Image (tube, rainbow, N blue to C red):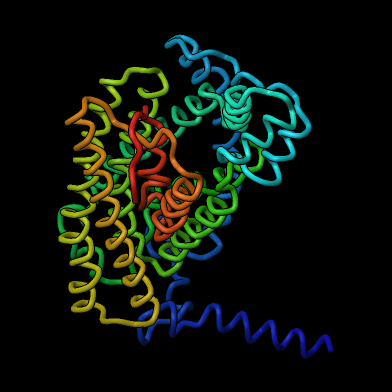
Length: 394
């Protein structure tokens, strides 16, 4: 029995690490065991170093939010208090938890007779009860400030690193000599920091305020980590650094717009969101397809030829581009409304079904193709972060 199990595990391990899947023809894992230069070649075991770094990032985040972000929030006038709690009521609580958080007129009238309460008072109770489950503005401000700081820092580091990298100026360098491309210390730190950051988000989910999209975001972070790891193991790190830096260019602008919104600087929020929209469209609909996809599809085909993991890698990048198009349309529409009306709006009395759809699309389908290569929870969080007066249809 033990021999059979060991044999099955050996077959599974061999299938997972099949050289014919991961590497081009006539290349084996043994060929990449040489010293190379700098840190040698990327190896699967390198990704384990992301765990202690992730724990360090998580610890830094806790200190940052307490000693830097929170004082900044209080300085701009954000109150250190949660929403007004709803009056305890067993009947209404049962309806809220088990039946609906948005009772219709018929149910409101029934509850009014049962409790001898005015309908308006019951509506007010449900509103307070819904707000009670929402994270306070102070918490959201601290979280966004941490993400803004990290995204801006990693973007600046990426630009500094890539500026002196030959493949930044000649993208065909991503494939010359592939996969025998030595791993430099700067490239190693860049990848491990990005990977560790998303591992830290996995950790933080379990102590942060539990949101409705907990499971969706858990899957999102897992997919992100998997795809960054995938590009590292098969040594597509050069083009990976370009993709990460390209997407980080707009991430910090989104967080900056959210910070301005939480601080009630509406004009600054609208301005930052419009700038974010422009950068997003230029990078995702311009630079990404004509620079990145062109090299991953055509130049790499010409220089190294296709193989199984090549097809998977390009398939994921192509799916990402489709999502770029969808979200660019939604973002531009929001930004256009901001310019026309003077503020970014979001649906004030949005139906639960619609909100769930937006949350699902933004938190799962959009971020899935690749870590910091995407904007997490993009349009829905932007919309929900800005003020609202008008309903919007899907």
